[in-house]
Length: 245
Image 1: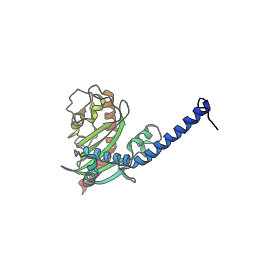
Image 2: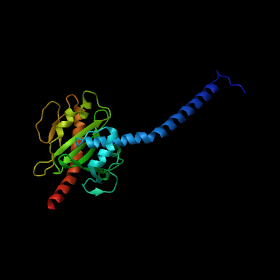
Image 3: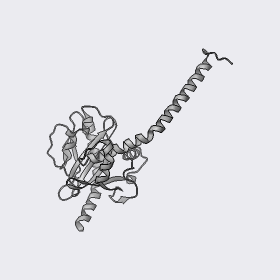
């Protein structure tokens, strides 16, 4: 039976076959590449965790260095108490989106902690996520064994404006955090404030925001204040128990 190549039925059939073939090829390609993609994501995450404690390595070298320096990983709840679960596997961005969408209640959130050894001794690496101007922003802040002094940090974003909000991913912004403290000496929580860009703040509990990137800076500031408040409870319980021994 001959087909009329100018007919609508032939055009529809041809389009259907083409879509099916292309879709199948894309699906097969995705399945084939998925393991490599997931491994690259895993290694990049290790890179970011290490970068927050001022250890920068190539992606392929990240697993070995991570294994060397990270001694323990666990999850804590909003009260700073350990809970069941795999810290590394927890998708903090998805959890954050679920919370913002009302799928999760605040008391259902879990917070990963990475215990590591830096050049100045033990540190706690604390992941966090928030919202910038155009999408998610996230980062890792490492805190010294005293439970209040920042050792290092790294931040990134999904789509902030180059030259403006995207500057949170540069050393110019990140290097400000080292030595800042999240509490007063008496233990009162202060968090780390992100001031308007260009102020040149000397606040021991604050950093200078990105000039022209006010909304992104505000998003990072909210992320820090909200997340560090939870981690502060954990850090206080850890440093107090250490002091008691």
